[in-house]
Amino acid sequence: MHELSIAIAVVEAVDELARRHDADAVDEVRLRVGELAGVEPDALDFAFEVAREGTLLSTARFTVERVAAVVRCAPCAVEFHPGTPPNLLCPQCDGGSVEVLAGRELELAGVGFPAPDHHDEEVTADVPGR
Image (cartoon, rainbow, N blue to C red; front, side):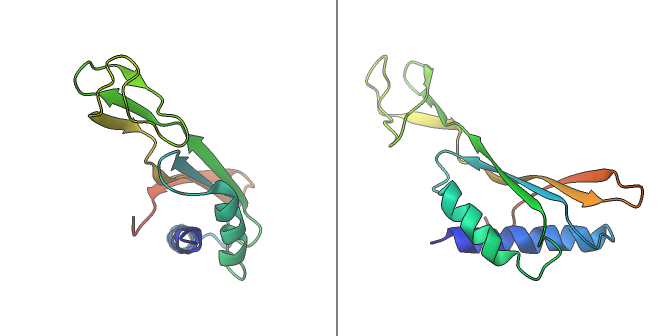
């Protein structure tokens, strides 16, 4: 279950961001996860619940934004969704040489901190260790 190591990395990165912004809590964490990243969203939700206990993220909303996979066929340049499980054969020319254009993402898309005037401040950053 590598989702736990991902969740721990997210919690550590957000905790570091919170400390740099002198925040004493985190309201929201948004993570962008590509369809081909090999991450199971339900397992990641569960792992995040475990990893955030006793941290500044203990009451933060956690949202996973799924990014659909898109690949481009090298021989004919057709772009297509490879499906689940991925089928990387081009539907137009049956070529098997493709470039992944989207779907491998694993990045921190946003973090919300409570501000003194009760407005959230949003910060973005990459997930370290990836």
